[in-house]
Image 1 (cartoon, one colour):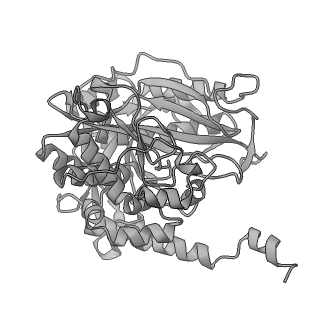
Image 2: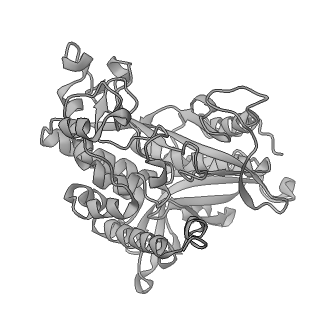
Length: 463
């Protein structure tokens, strides 16, 4: 088991990094390798690692890689791509050393990169670049998006040879304590590692299902939060592995138990002020801008869910009976609709979009959510009145009377909705949209053509 302790080698989270200060920091702190990180279209973390001899070249954005081998990037005849580092994301791994004989190998640092074409032009399919594009649209309107995701995950036992299982190592439930909750030691180690990377951890706790956990970190500007979320998932998996466990962000790994969601709290700021709040406004201080933003999310929800919940398994979480939202409504306090407005007002006024799950690419997910909300503001899309009753327990007639529609029932239906939504397609851009649809259509077709164990158990001997 790996135990992490704070070390003086880490700079303050508020450090403003430059090329030269990073080079100096790596030299001073015996950094031997630098990991250049990025994500593919589907949100999988990727990296190219370089030794100390290549640090200057890497920080100048001159490291090239084969983009044709990465999901959703380029064709083989135009495969050379560049990694341009975002200096602000630089940090040293919380595992201070590298290698089996780590005393001799020095430390490992990492930096998050944007993907560029070989001619130094921005690559249209770079997920980080797509989010930057959409946050640029918001900036043109005078707004900055803040986001705070709550990414749940499961911790499972592994076999003697390290293979993942779906056997949980505890039988605890929501907010339970040890000894029932056997995950608290792992959560503490994860928290220590994240704090070393500059995260401000707000809370950690056991979730509803056995083996299910949540660690919350403070909200921030959307692009920075998406960067942190990619690192969060890496750290969770790494710490779990070091403790002999398997961490998964799969939305619904166990039938009959709650799945893992990633509720995303979001707000818009202008000149340091939260524009979602207006003192004395109808609906307890909710501004017109916030109401229209909600209207945009509800209008585009059936399409953007293909991006925020992008797997076949995602839709096995989005079913009635497991606290996951399935209907397009909003509420001031009620947790059954798609959107909930937490009680806090003033600078903390925000909405909570409850359908996303942690299998998504955070850059693309934040981009399409923001694009939908901005469309609501630009076109002053009025949402229906907030729902006070439990949407889950309403009859179809009641929901029809209130004009409450439902999310798509599966990935195929969600992709159909995405193909018809120009706002979400425009946010993704032609390249990323085309690659995403192609990959997800193939995934859906493979799934529906496969014969699953449930079918064999149900039909093999009865027909």
